[in-house]
Image (cartoon, rainbow, N blue to C red; front, top):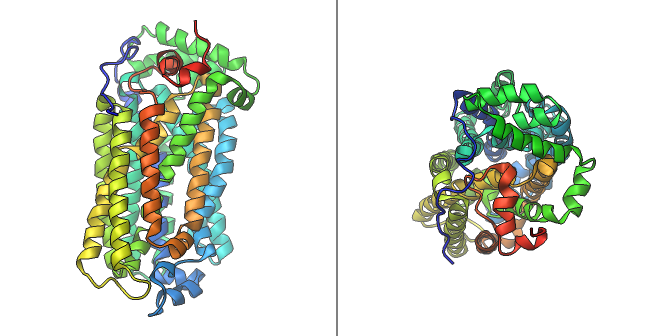
Amino acid sequence: MAVGVMDIEEGAASLPGKTTFQVVMCSIIAAVGGLMFGYDIGISGGVTSMDTFLLDFFPHVYEKKHRVHENNYCKFDDQLLQLFTSSLYLAGIFASFAASFLCRRFGRKPIIMSASIFFLLGAILNYFARDLGMLIGGRILLGFGIGFGNQTVPLFISEIAPPRIRGGLNIAFQLLITIGILAASFVNYLTSTMKNGWRYSLGGAAVPALILLIGSFFIHETPASLIERGKDEEGKKVLRKIRGIDNIELEFNEIKRATETSNKVKSPFKELFTKRENRPPLVCGTLLQFFQQFTGINVVMFYAPVLFQTMGSGNNASLVSTVVTNGVNALATVFAVIMVDRLGRKFFLVEGATQMMATQLTIGALLLKYLHLVGPITSHAVPLIVLILICIYVSGFAWSWGPLGWLIPSEIYQLEVRTTGYFCAVAMNMVCTFVIGQFFLSALCRFRSGLFFFFAVMNVIMGLFAIFFLPETRGVPIEDMAEQRWKKHWHWKKYFKQN
């Protein structure tokens, strides 16, 4: 089934306002939360492949890695090593749950500030780590920072952005994730030959945390959050600043109407799970994050250096390959920023799933044929071909399920359940990331190249989901999403009372 590119959506131009410097500045500063997240994703795999790190904390893995006759797929199979990566995301689940309540009570801005403080403390603890307990403790603090940031930043951007450029501004979050991953791969490459270089890699997480902490003093609270908490005049003042006009009554009235409905809800979780009208965004928002993780992307982002070493590349060569891959990731996300509000969300989701499916199948076939249980790949061309395929795969993710997995859930919920509904999406992300981070290396050991075929099948399923069950959200004001999209969708309309 073809996915058409929609004409200019109704409602996009109904709210007056300009694209102001205030909106762009606030969006970019808030999106630095993505820089923190990306840096951590990129740093973890590189650090776990460093010999000095393994000798300090996982000497048994170091010995296994350097055995000549060790199974290629099982060199890094260790639950404690995987816990180093995955513990952050377990903490992130609890943090995002807490942030879903705190956001509503205290606003978006203080939660973004708190995210930077947690992340900064975690970076400091990891830099000074002397044992595994300190290392995991630092990861847990980082997880609280990630949980607070990922819960709040996309909502913040969606609430301050004009509908016509909401997609592009929100994808700034994903763009900075990719830039964080790229920066981390450069840092890993530079520190890999240093004595205790892993300390500089892990401690470097303090840099994006400090940027966000300082920047958070200069951003505005969102009008929706202010009005929801009874600060109408302050909400109007911020609306005038971020829209660049005095005539903000139409948008104010829409937000006011939504907040009045929101404030009648005493139990957002009960409202979310029991009210039929909330089921379509709940299902779609949560599944988007589930599918985002099961594209197989974190297999590449967490463990790219490990994967290239498994194929026989040296440590430096594997880190260089990772830098190349992450550079492609950042450039492809720039393309998404430019085009997502022109071509629409569904176009990119379907195209990206198709592209990722094809490359996963090809990588799996190459590993099946050329990577034997013992010894390096004998063909020198295969690692280069796999690198090219991974770059194609990453570009497909970076302009589709990567940014849109965060964007769409942030724009589909009504205000009364927005933070609660978005928590469900973030929690699904954290749970799936934890599962993949904790068990991928063990699964690679047992299923070998078959793991890539599994992810290829998942990409087929998610492409079909996007075609048949996701409405196009491009250009629609958030408060009008139910009227303009869910009530008109062939499947989801049955969950709404028809007028």
